[in-house]
Image 1 (cartoon, rainbow, N blue to C red):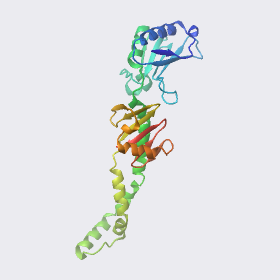
Image 2: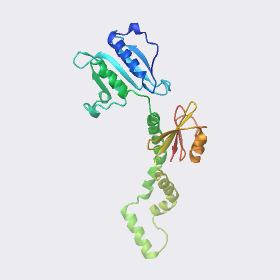
Image 3: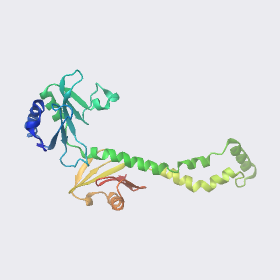
Image 4: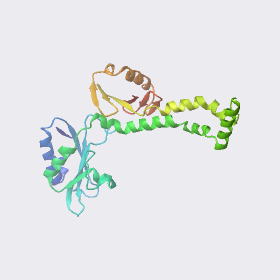
Length: 266
């Protein structure tokens, strides 16, 4: 189903109205729902953008799932341009990211086909991708914040040779200050090595209305009846993260994102 939001059909240009009619008819046969709004070009009243949204989320929670623009094309011909995160247009590759996620055509039927194929509701794992990266960055910052400790364990070659010969000949404690310093820094070194061994992977949990969505670090997703269905480790981590503000990290526990998203170390 395609739900129109505050669209004055009489104000639409004919190509946009025709496209909207075709899409509405086709969407009546689909098993998912999208909302669509229309934005007129301020410089050319004939040109419009149709913006498609996943109705489960507010505009603050999720960007539009796609859009269709009726405007000038590359050869000064009017055409439809379909944009979606799911489109991968190999004609442009990585050098033009905007065009890479779009398809252009003058044909309304091809545009309808593009929208039905590529403009779809979000999968749960897509909604955690951006903030999962924030969680990874926060974890990496904590993990590496004392990494300069390694420089305390780099004596020069002369000191190393002197100490080794001294130990071999006398079998007594370290002589040089550099090795004495290394001994005093060993607890910090061991802690830093332990931090560096922490695997930077998270399972994600989204609380959305009456649902609990569980997304594993490798993208497997499931909807759970309640938080009690989560593993005990995840329940304990969420209990700690709930008292934190958004975008906060607890070492070796997890990260709290925005809009009730939690990322728990695996």
